[in-house]
Length: 147
Image (cartoon, rainbow, N blue to C red; front, top):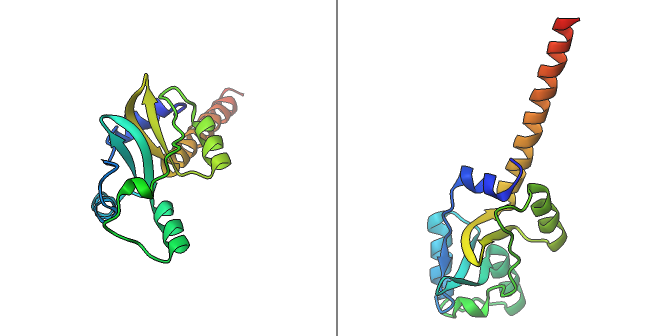
């Protein structure tokens, strides 16, 4: 796997989202029911933000409360960093590490096509390393057999 396109081909392009006016409790329930750590906040097909477990924990610690009927738009991260399908896995790893983020929406030509997580990126890196190791082992073995 070399690009985001490869990750999406393996994991699929399903993206769970909520609208900006959705309540915090509905977002939490959706995250729980789909076993995900973040939801994109989408309005009319346009990414307006992202709401993650981190957003919830930081804001609860900040406010010492969680008004569950409040709109997602008041707690979401509005400045969303995105990548496209041709972004390399290594670029994603560097970006996520540098920006301290765990999720990257994938947008091609202004259209949302997927969402990848740090777990997806780590699995892709490990898979690439395993392929390299197997290739090297096969090369060494073939060299021993021919000598």
